[in-house]
Length: 105
Image (tube, rainbow, N blue to C red; front, side, top):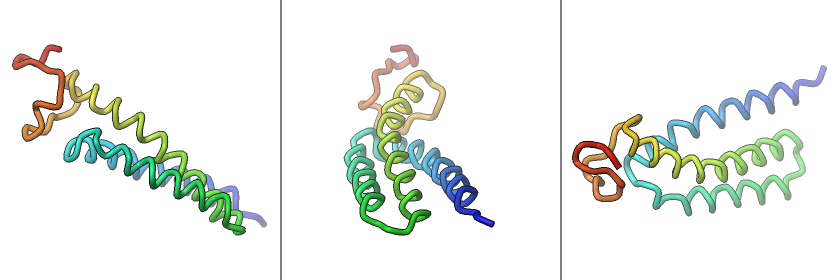
C-alpha cells in the first residue's frame, strides 16, 4: 500500500494551516516589510524541490515554496483587512496604515 499521496496531502494541509497565522502575526508585528523573507524562503524551498531525489520530501518542499510565495500576497491583503477593521492594528505601527482616527480610509 502506498501512502505517499496521503502524506503529501496532510503535509499541504499542515503547511497552509501553519502559514495562515504566521502571515497574520507577521503583519501585526513587522508589517508588510517582511515580504522579502517570504520570497527568499519560498525560492529556497522551490530550489530544494528541484534538487532533492526523495519524492515525498521534494513534494513537501514544492508545496512549502509555493505556499510561502503565495503568502507574500496574503501579507498585503492582511494589511488591507487590518485597514478595514477586520483584524486588530498594531498601535506601535499606526502610521503605516491608510486609516484616519475614526477608522475610515
